[in-house]
Structures are given as structure tokens and as C-alpha cells.
Length: 637
Image 1 (cartoon, helix red, strand yellow):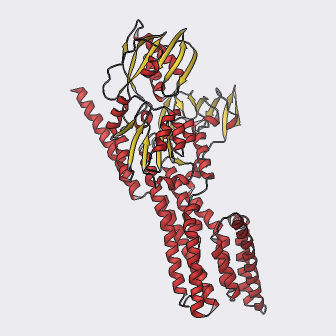
Image 2: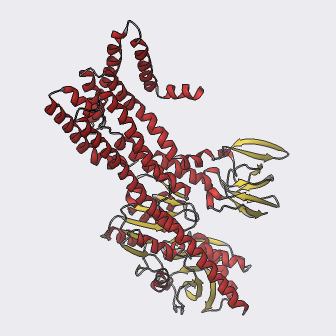
Image 3: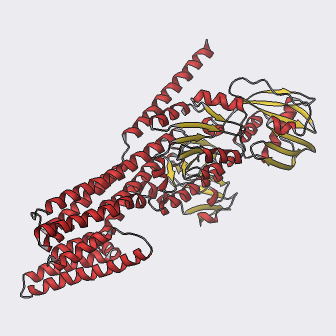
């Protein structure tokens, strides 16, 4: 009962319309039956007046509304004495908002589920006491108690000996993940069966899950682009509907025929079904760990013709192995690596982070750093332990040091060159392997109609071309600065362009592309903010899935529009014969609306192309497993 009351409080005009209908039916059985036409017709006229004023305001803003059909249908049915048909059209008009909200809620539930799970309270340990505080009040260094089945409120490190966590909402991993003392735990993960303590390492606003929630809120606030798509059909459909109604009047000479034709001309497939399909597509994407900030991204994805990829951390794993060190001076290998690791603190590049991790794994302690400056896409200049250290590309280092010699590289290797106090000190050789799913992803994109694929990277040509060849890309633009990447994207003739990247240097080009996709699992906040779409899972297959979902969503939206239009035109042609009473036609109009919305909700289910991408993923996984088994066998032999 409470839900019913809440519904009518939220949608009062629906309740009033139903109330007028019930009172009218009761009065028909009384001596006051003559009042019914005045009650029902008068109420319908008031609603028509209200809608007419609203429509005039829209026209003054140069916005054409499909409500014109409903308005003319109400006025015409009142004029010819079809009061009950007018009331049904009023119910359709007033109930449209409620119907749209219901369908949108069904389509959008994957996105709202992420918001509903967002933690609001944290149990902070203050000495011997436990205090519940708002998540936003948690500070770095606070000790937080997380009870069984609770969501971790902020990013932190585990203080307890061990714990098991459900990280499916963040990484997509379906099985619980075991963590040991000192390991990082992410906000949004669900604690297992035992209580654990963590130490906060970030504020709530900077935590992983809160960044995801912010993206989802942005997505929820976006306007469905199907308003634009629907507008393409609005004027022609209105003209055809009014033309058929006028034709019926002209042929029969009876104005009732005009009303009978017009009451079945439903604008619902354009007004509701198409946006519902887009919200369903966004919900479907969210279920796959793909957050789309705007429904407009879906429409653009469906038309993408060019795919551009960054290399490091996008086509490659982003976790390169330290292969060897080539020395060119008096420094030992450990001394050189210590200077490199210290200088790379100033860099946000994926390779810098991986290089520092590899150096730390060798037990090398980084000396203290004074001034440090990163030159985008080229290298780092720093004062380390009183020495001037340059780390980066050969051209960058050669500008300030003498005697630089290029390292001899195997395919897929990359060299980081080092200069110390004006002299060439050596090179650190890294190997960043292609992602195992990269080749399958590119094959899937080709099958989805992507005409051109290229790599645009700041890395040197030899390394970039080697990685591109391994994953199946022929066109490579290497040694590009951020401004070069932007220029290349702007000059591409095959539009729209989709760009995929994960680093700070990718942020400008992600913003320039018609569709920017950021690998958010390890990608930087800057890249995620600049992108239109964020992949929460560290899986390049998400790019092909996003394109497949976009194509299916637009296809379903168009199908929903045409299904509704086709049925409406069929009913209008039938009404031209005079065999469809206005009240029956008004009722059938509601059926057409329901059919169109149900057709739109199909966007929630995976389509054939999306399933084929998933099958490629499975095949890639089997292939990787076999390759690993073969490598293991070879090592044993």
C-alpha cells in the first residue's frame, strides 16, 4: 500500500486521471450520467491546455516536441465527443513519465547498484575505542576496522595477518582474493568471514572505488543522445500522422475519422523506447566493467571507423622486465640502478613505475633526490645525491652528455639511457611483452567493422614497430610528443576515431578523440577524467566489447523506433477504414508503447557480436595456458 501511495505522490497527474475515470464510470450508473462528458472532457481539456502552454514554450526555445501528436489527439477526440478516448490519451501522456522511469530504472540498475554499494561509514580505531565516522572524515594513517561482509571504505594496507576479499566489483575476479599483512587492499572490495584491520593510505575521495562511483554519477547525469536520434524521425512521423488523419477525414467526410486515426499515432517509441535502449546499453556495459560517462559514447562507438592505441601499458602489459644493464662508465650496476630508480621517482610513466619496482626487487636502496623534473614523453632530469642525472630516450640524454652509444636491442626490447654529470653512464634494457589478449582484440575490432588501426606512441621506432607487428598492427607513429599525438588524431580522415590509452601523456589525445577509452584498472586519474569510457578491468578485450555493445544498442534503439512507427502506421491505415473506434484505438496505442519498450530492454542482454568477442577471450585464455604449459615443459627438459 505504501508503494502505491508513493507512486501517486510522485506522479499526481496519473492518480488524478485515474480518479476522474473511476468517478466518471460511477456517475454513468446514476441519474448524474449527463455530467460525465463535462467531467471527463473538461479534465482532458485542462490537460491539453497545460500541454499546449508547455509546447509553446518549447517552440520559443526552438525545440520541436512529439507531444504535438498527443495534444492534437486530445483536442480532436474532445471536439468529436470521444471523451473516453481523450482520457486514455491523457493517461498515456501523464503516465509516460512513470513508464519511462520504470523502464530506465530496469535498464540502469547495473549503474545504480555500484552507487548503492558505496560505503558511507568507517569504523575508526581511536586507541582502545571504536568510533563510527563518515567515510569522508577518514585521514591517511587512520586504522580502520572492517567487519565481515562489509565494504572496505578507503584504499589501504592490511594490518591483520591475513584476509580474504571479494574484489569482483573492481577487478572482475569472481573468486575471493587472499591478502597478507602489508599488502594493499582496495576500497569497494567486500571483506570475507573475519574481521580485519587496515591502515588508510588515501582519502576517500582519492580511493579506487570512489573514483569509480564518481564516473558512474557522471554517467547517470548524462543525457541520452537518442533525443538527437529520435528527433530525426519526429517531424516526418508527425507530418505522416497528421496527413493520414486528414486523409481519413477527407475520404469519409466525418471529423470522427480524423480523431480515430490520430489516437493510434503514438510518439512513445521516439520519446521513451530509444532512450531506454541507451540506458540499457550503459547498464550492460557497466556489468562488463565498462563505465560510459555519457550515453553519447554509445552512439559514437557504433560508428567508429578508426582505432588508435598507445603502446606502453595499453598494447603491452605495462610491467616490463629488467633484462640487463649495459655499463659505459665507472659506476657499478647497483650504483647506476640506484641513481636511475631515484630519478624515476619524478616520472608518472608506466615504465618508470615498473623500473623502480624491478630495482627495489634487487634490494637496491635509492639515494636521496634533490630537484627533479620530468620532460613529457622524453625523460627525467634530477639531482641525486649531489649528481646531475638524466634518464630517458637517447636524444634527450645526448643533448646534455657526451659519448652516448645506442644499445643493441632484440625485437621487443626498449632501452632507457642514463647520463651522470655530463657523461654517458650506460643503458638499462627492458622487455615489455604484448598483452596476451591484444591480437584477439584487434581481430575482433576488425570483425566489428573498424577500417583502420594504428599505434601512436612516444616510444622509439624499433620497439614500437616490434610490438605492433606482434599484435597485428601495420601502421605505427613512434617518438611522438603529446602535441604530435593530438595532431595525428586530428588529421585522420576515417572518422569517428577511438583512442585507447592509460597514462598521463594520453590525457590530451583521449580528450581530442571522438571516443576516448582509458584502461582505468591501472590507468591514471588524469587519463580516466579525460576519457569518455573507463575500463575498470585490466583487460583489452573491453575495447572490443564496448564497440560491440555500442553497435547493438544503437541497432536495438533504431529497431524499437521502427517497430513502434510501423505498428502505429499499420493501425492508422486500419483506422482509415472506419473499423477502429477511437476508444479501442487509444487502448491499442498503450499496447504499442509497451511493445516498443520491451523491444528496447533487449539492450540489457548480450548480443551475438558481444558473445563472439567473449568466445575470442576464452580461446585466447586457452591459447595462453597452452603456451605457458609448453614453456614449462621446455624448461623441465
